[in-house]
Length: 158
Image 1 (tube, one colour):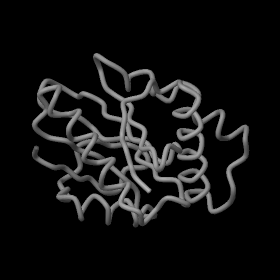
Image 2 (cartoon, one colour):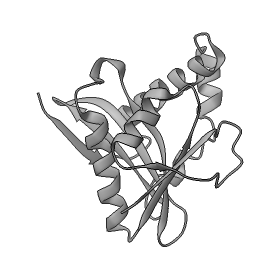
Image 3 (cartoon, rainbow, N blue to C red):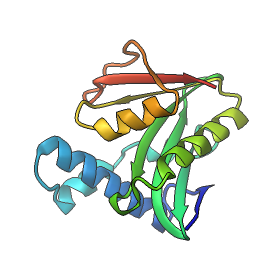
């Protein structure tokens, strides 16, 4: 079984399904109950994913043995800084190395854009994500935004 990571339009069927699964998981964990279809639709409406395309960003999909299994967005903040967003690995594909390969793909895309630093914010309850970031060289930094769900901030110099 092998992983590949490719740039994909955020609105492709595979990317859209991954974004729905991502939002379902983060909303359900936050609320402590399964998110409804209407809540997922509402959360994805005007979620800014349109900025995850050149020239303002990129959306990547991780494929495990040809199946869409993970995703991540890269949003350019300025000429040398980008934000990592919507990082998600479907549960069936976790612990297979895909998260690290996805981060490597995002970092490669960032370097190609001239980015020297990637940053992100995340929540307390997303323990696995925080572990993934730390494992791959992201370090906690002071808050750089006031997002309603931002509780931890990380950055990595490329």
